Length: 218
Ligand code: BG6
Ligand code: MG
Image 1 (cartoon, rainbow, N blue to C red):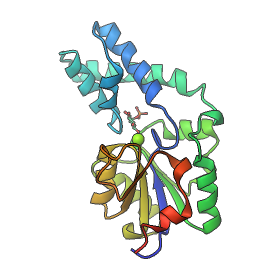
Image 2: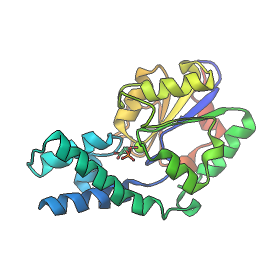
Image 3: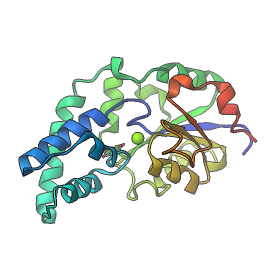
Image 4: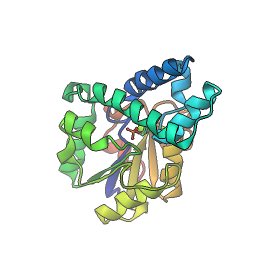
């Protein structure tokens, strides 16, 4: 890799903390099915697709459901989730995000989104961040979930930048693995013990700078 030419961002946990809304929405489903779902359990759903999240939830409750029942439960969960995210606004953007996006824009570094969420467009619009992204690859555009690199490779392709010149920002282990599998560099957002495979780990985008980004040049 030479100089970083593009930055690809995961959404949930990097740009906005939606995990709390996913949690309440899944907990409502678990409670209706008659079991509890804890915050610790919720950690297992980060970065995981909606249907895989449901499989994990059902395994916690020791339940099995038909495909049809599962689809109905996933739809119900998403309806719950939508009631929360439709109330979100720019005040929920995580600290430092806008400043860092502005900095990248100023430097001519391209920006894309690479998210598993099918609600990504709704969320970006609520946060008024959509215009920063030259390419948006979300859960409606991919068939293989992270750690498969599909979401990021499609993002790099849409930006017309080679994977080796891309840096991915990710808060989930599967997302870090996806970036590396795609031949990209990765900056982990969160804790080094979980995101140890990333090239660099920071607490949040508020801790990012062009200098830190340039550590990934070679
Ligand atoms: C990921 C979240 O970004 O998107 C997961 O980290 C979530 O928790 C997944 O399950 C799918 O989201 P959605 O909005 O399509 O249900
Ligand atoms: Mg995430």
